[in-house]
Length: 162
Image (tube, rainbow, N blue to C red; front, side, top):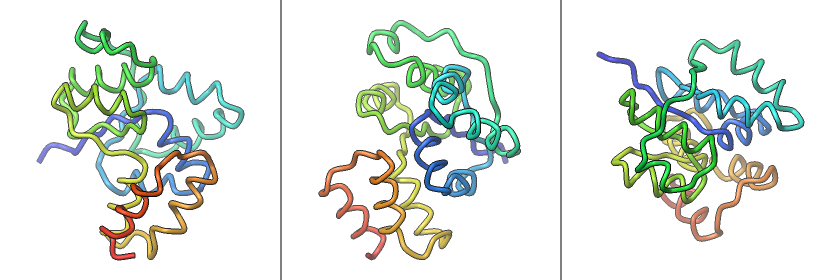
């Protein structure tokens, strides 16, 4: 069976890294692809170099060069990271893209890609028994900078039985 390949954007990596939950992402798939534009975005953050060292040491992560994005992706006028995540997923047949940005999610769905965000990672981790409770993880992510509406958080917690 081919490895399950997800292409991941900066914000899920940054948020999960800051809250010491980066391992949840790696536990959900076989390969996490990080395009160069995402690496550059992370590297520009205050603790970005530390996060990049952690990612580089984990065998589940593969750092890749940027792709030539198609006009249908470029027309969305997304950030470089979102553009490259979608372009890579489209070019190389990713099972899923990991994006929090709303317009990036909309573009990925328009390109017929499956999407998951940071909250979805937490929900899956709870469903798989990787964490005992989702609520404290979600609250910590929100404190660290994840924007999620109260309705969305309540729906996630309800779906995972909390």
